[in-house]
Amino acid sequence: DASDIEKGTYAHYMLKEIEEQPFVIRKIIQQYQDEQGDLTIDSSIVNVLNQADRLYIVAAGTSYHAGLVGKQFLEKLANIPTEVHLASEFVYNMPLLSEKPLFIFISQSGETADSRAVLVEVKKLGHKALTITNVPGSTLSREADYTLLLHAGPEIAVASTKAYTAQIAVLAILADVLRKNKGIEKNIDLAHELAIAANAMEEICDTKDEFEVIASDYLSFVRNAFFIGRTLDYAVCLEGALKLKEISYIQAEGFAGGELKHGPIALIEDGTPVIALATQENVNLNIRGNVKEVVARGANPCIISMEGLEMNGDRFILPAVHELLTPLISVVPLQYISYYAALHRGCDVDKPRNLAKSVTVE
Ligand code: AGP
Image 1 (cartoon, rainbow, N blue to C red):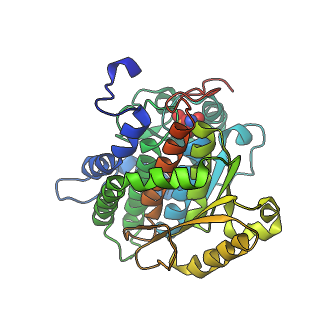
Image 2: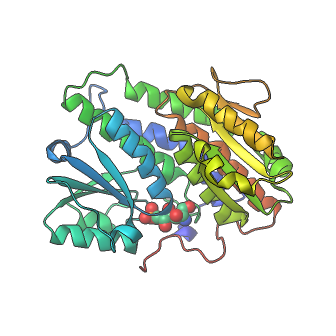
């Protein structure tokens, strides 16, 4: 209950929850380590996932965005085909399922009615389900066969922040444990890489003043704002846009860089803010080409890149982390920018209009 949790010296729960993220990642590493320090997941969960021929991630909102990142982990680390679905769509339009599907419900609250409706349906069909949630004993946890906890601590602000990064960390651990269990060799020490990401998050939090300046430079008098990225950066752009629209009411959209020319570039006018993420080496030149295209149409670009990939004119350079874990850190500036944009506009940061923390109606 919100009244039980102190904001302490923080002006808002959202700010507190953003800044808790490095600690949450460290807590997750600890919670999922065995006595030898190896990352581990309950063997019944590992076995049931390894028997599946395809994973179906089902979620809503921010949890869906974490699922888009998780798909990359499960496919790239553990070689398991993975689909990600919006619960509200899946329930009325079920895709053709594979022979041995396994369902993963991602939900901070564990109470989202759209997700529960899907769980009820797939249970009726006799399929097994794993819930990844922040709330032990929640409906989705009780009704699924297996649960993995986020250990993020209570999230009070309506705009989800630490639950998103916790979901990504737990999905990475799940994918890595499945990988090892299948004997797939990859040159990655995930616990170590997550610890590096936690430190990077902390460094980013230490420079939050910079994001307040970015928010006022780019978002003070605008009606809309766009986030562009490719591959993992695209998934984070969808989350960045959701954060901004939820709490600042600026119309914000995330686009895949390569899709701009297929339509969205028509929206660019003089001064339109375009926040671009550039953390992925294999598409670094491509996304920078996309930035040039929008700048040629008058956009006001804000490039957030990463050490090793930076170029002249980048507005913020993230500390380097493993290429799969960039969403953990690239989302942090976007959370802050949304926070400050909302604050500058006098919006109710923790309780945005028309929104509920957990959506318990379909
Ligand atoms: C996040 O900022 C949102 N308020 C919302 O999209 C949320 O992520 C969604 O309703 C899903 O909630 P859940 O994770 O509790 O299922």
